[in-house]
Length: 97
Image 1 (tube, helix red, strand yellow):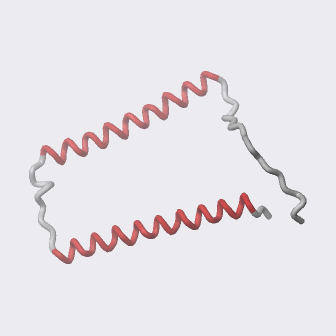
Image 2 (spheres, rainbow, N blue to C red):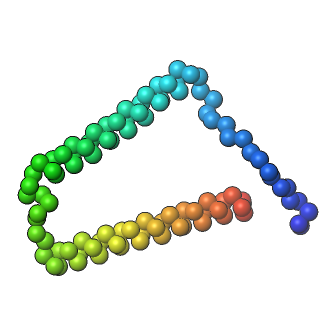
Image 3 (cartoon, helix red, strand yellow):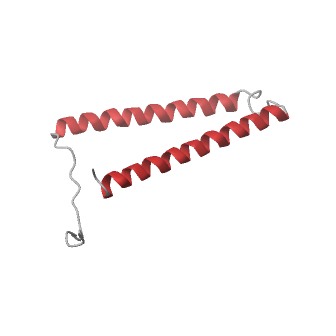
């Protein structure tokens, strides 16, 4: 069973076979999405810095603990989902059906 082993030393990445006009269109589209994302984040940061009430908003101890608990719970859940997804990817590649 151990006789069927191949040692791969290099591989070549091939992109999708698209012509240059479609590649430029997609590049422009994704660049536009990126610029809009940057502009949106800049607007949010600008509004926060202009409104003096936003940084100085007091929060109760219970609210702070609830927010911290939920943040940590969701962060751990995301990490666990990434672990499960990477294990599934590993099994699909290394032990195909």
